[in-house]
Image 1: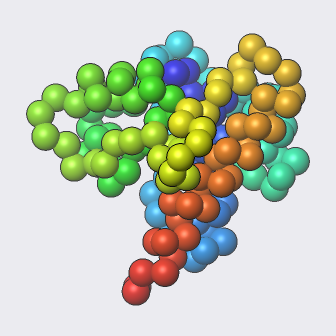
Image 2: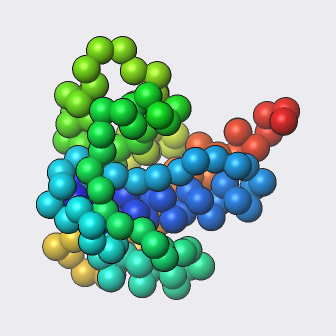
Length: 146
């Protein structure tokens, strides 16, 4: 929603994992609301991520724009509400595939829970889910001929 917890965590994880796989990808994050626009990621998100080696420097929250749906090939939402908001933003045909970040994992968890109002364990759970999803999205790309 506000681009300070789940989405910057996903951006940091996907950037790190893509780099480790030798993939040169344009990876960004955005919220579906502008409530936290211009703010850094939630300190609890960045602390949990930094403990696992992820970088959050220079990240600031922004709201997704309709142009993003043609700028990026893949736009992933953390939950059904954000997915619906992204679909509402799409006016006319878009080039991006739009889906849930956990779609890559098949059956099981379908949404990344919002850790904002919970404790530290919620941020760890978000990292666990996003790491698994990032590997599932990126590993097949790393096997494609370059």
